[in-house]
Image (cartoon, rainbow, N blue to C red; front, side):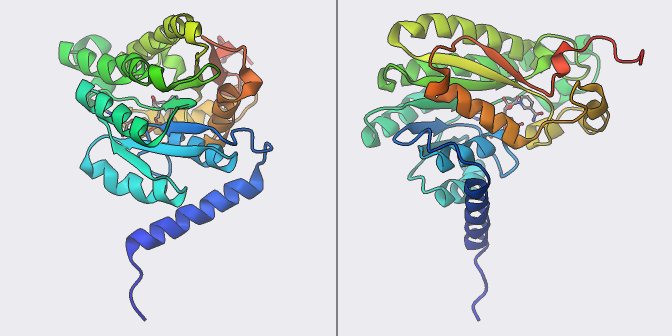
Length: 287
Ligand code: NAD
């Protein structure tokens, strides 16, 4: 018997997961005929991957982007398992990557109905310690550029391909609104991302393009693992939300599906909290 190629095994596993997702949820193929560009899949724990699986199950044709060759090895098998043909290298910190990506999408597709921005990055050392000590000029520049400006850069580049009724969705976190220790400069970047969501929504409303964000509660992913104290926070968080539980990947995917479907056809500039109600709670230690 010949040994199983790890890539084949990965594809088989991802296919089984996709099948499973398809059998578990069904919203009537609400994205049938839509074409979606998904950024931000790093592995099968990525929020973007949960979104991609659900969008695929709901009938969307998908294109994926990844930043750099090292990431390609992880993303390609996953993307291929959902039938994607467009799997493109795009570091959103580089204008030339964004331009090339749009040109490659344009060569294959006549339009893009959905753009998912699921990208966040800050140097690790900026996510551990006192805000004043670790927030260097460089950490600020990189975090704001990659995590917030990229939404504007991608939206501008994809705009000519996006017809009226299309939509952009990004992912944010409550650390933009209130202090979450160690989240530090990412909180500042998420505040910029949310504000940019409103400015983009107003501007792109002229073309009938909607722009929204999902503010997700904490979920275990690669990006989350880079934030000091995240593990403890996750274990303590559940009891403190109104629903007394943490959210999961699929909660985020369903919210993104709503925002990117015609169900939300008059929703734009919105930051939708999917956090088991956490953001409404003030003092929790009096009960
Ligand atoms: P993840 O690590 O799976 O995804 C982050 C993605 O950002 C990766 O795919 C990575 O390749 C991509 N990325 C980083 N730098 C990039 C660059 N220069 N160019 C292109 N892509 C780049 O983790 P995730 O938790 O799924 O994160 C996705 C989004 O969700 C992020 O915006 C994150 O801030 C946000 N979010 C996460 C949580 C959580 O608890 N996990 C909560 C709220 C919001």
